[in-house]
Amino acid sequence: MKLRLALCSILLVLLLPLLTACGEHEPEVPPLTDIEAMTSEDASKALSGFRRQDILDAWGEPQDVSDTMESLQMDLYDAPTLGGWVVVQYDTSDITDPDTELDTLPVKGVDIQTIG
Image (cartoon, rainbow, N blue to C red; front, side, top):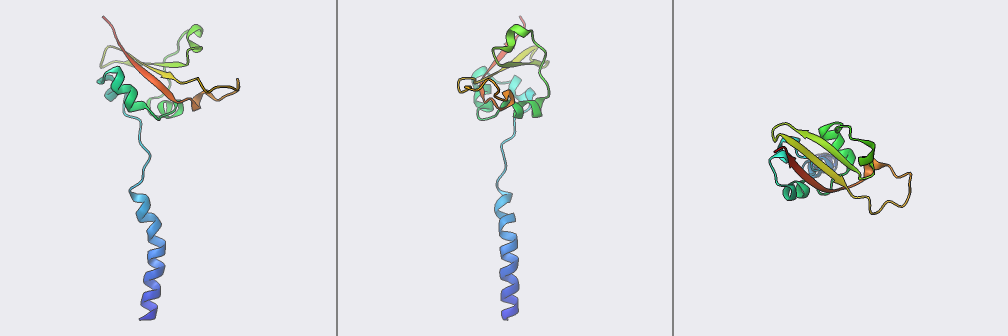
């Protein structure tokens, strides 16, 4: 009886961390096609809390834009379903060090642009 109780206790101690971790997961960046279907306001809310690297990992590299736009800290993604672009803007207000890694910038807002 004591052996069974000891084995159950050990098993419980080993499994408890696994069971509690099952319900936890990091939020995922919504697919670009989902963002295309949203308003700019809803898209900004959906991407709030994510950083540039999260967006790059989910959607890949953005379009190359001219050097004059680099200072604005935004990425431009084709939105083929929409027939336009999704522009992700990043918050640079807390940058005090010029060597700050830009991929750590948080999303500031999203602008959905259509052609026509």
